[in-house]
Length: 328
Image (cartoon, rainbow, N blue to C red; front, top):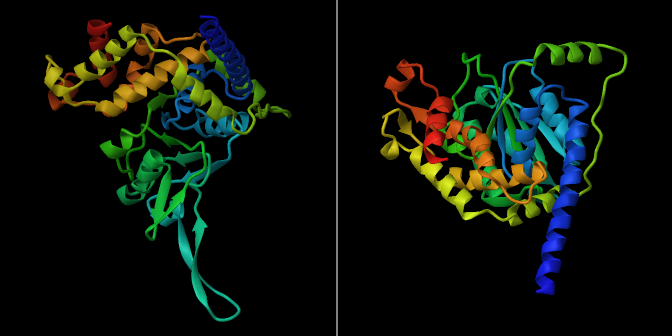
């Protein structure tokens, strides 16, 4: 019994220490990114869960700056890939080149592409062709890539934060459902309120501007990710997650609004995300509030509405909200 109490006490102490570190991380990010607390929280939940995030927002809302700041504060190597219509898969993954030695012998040498980083920013991901977008599929799911039949492991941890402009659709290629499903959360950036925009106006146009500061040491994020997976989840939370995901599928949709819905990966993502949010907010286990808060970011990009529902101006967020009312 004493051993069990000691183990529990150690776990609580570890969670408390992790919460203190994460509070410092949030404060460091907030010194650079103003007025996007919800988006910063969602991005940190994504990274603590070990997943990838799709950041959606109009130009000028600091999508790029958010990713760069997170990379610095979390101590991750970061590479930015600007997706364009002429981008090729080899521009992301890398390619083999033929080397000739002094004795005349030849051999192929693999030159790594920008995907070989701990935090990859896929900027305007929907501007590249489907063929190029698919180059990230294996990397996002399996954390390695295959070039010329050879496997090349990616750094650990490995995360992709992709950005997408919701307004400009000309010259873009919608992300396929298989790739959307690999994003743990869809992170929406909204316009700042007046006071926040005033602060941005004053603090970013003067002589001195706040810069990101590294807080986490090598391997510390991975230890936090391991802790997230050890947080206990009550049976009520598990059932709520199952009820929510299963109710978001066409067969269970009594209103007939849903054309296609989330698969089991959505439930896995929600299970990890609620644990990460609990740790991020200083709690030892997730609650139903976490499920409600993360339902839309987890499910929004994994669902599509019928033509009739869209004609009635229904949104995915609205449909998920109605499902939440029934299951929680």
